[in-house]
Length: 106
Image (tube, rainbow, N blue to C red; front, side, top):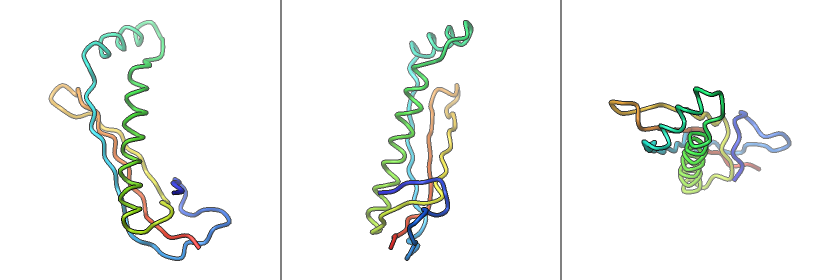
């Protein structure tokens, strides 16, 4: 499955648009990781724990979107957009959502 943020795929022709597809992942940030991330932020280091959570969330959301596209018979998804949002009363949850257009390539 080709997944791209561009509206087309160079050298390939879109023969059918199958519709919008989406994927979501909601992840909790654990309190120990939050504590160490805040220390790293203060001393200027990278917050590796958060980077891993973001990566895992992005991969899970894309995987869900790809499954939805496969169910429609697509072999590619174009125009993909990925968004991140904090949720919860204390912003302790992270939601990663992605959407795009499922297509068949010729």
